[in-house]
Image (cartoon, rainbow, N blue to C red; front, side):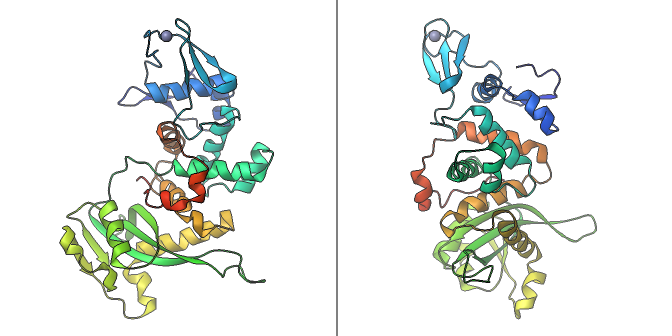
Length: 332
Ligand SMILES: [Zn+2]
């Protein structure tokens, strides 16, 4: 692949990445399956590229129809997309690149209906499944924990169509949020990285694991007076309790977490309209992934692709059993 026209950045692990500035650049870079597969090989095997595990030969053909590497010397074959988000796909890999690019660069994300239209899929379900697979790649297993001063609070998110004439109603699910407390130059509250998790209830059994999984011990955690948070000192945290007297005080005492909740709810309704509770964690992962990269938007596509290429394969069955992906946390 000729990258000369585009700025290439060599990562510390010698993986060359390109950061297309416009959709025209993107299309120029990835307009054939071969170009996409070569880029995947850069990400998967580093700058040296692929090497045959048997004869150590470096030259290969690409069998585009089924995304296979064929060793020129000994005929060994290996799939480009085994153990990736794209595994088993029968669709051209270019479409996956385009889908990830659109998801990564649309500021408010992409609905399944929009992807269905843009890529002209045969059925809506394909677009829906692809987006959920891509969202799963938004939960980086190598994430680092939040640290410093952290605001934590929960909220209910209502979804479903509800009764006629009402936008919301019916189902609701509980979501807990942790956010790093920062301040801008003028001294107003600002947010660092976040974590979000769908929880079955607000008990200590649900809240404590969320905190220990996502926040470095020694950090200071600010919560309201809810008893589900008591006992955090036992895990090595400093716990600062700020009791909320009236409901109107909540957004003043916990400004960051409340801003995140209200923006996230607006995003869920605005972009996706209908979000099922069963798949809520996947949407939370997408929101977190995007939020934590808001200052460096051009990285999002490459970050997404890097995780997708190295992600253990996931099956459709795992969407229908969401508890298996329930506690995967978004990267930050
Ligand atoms: Zn070989």
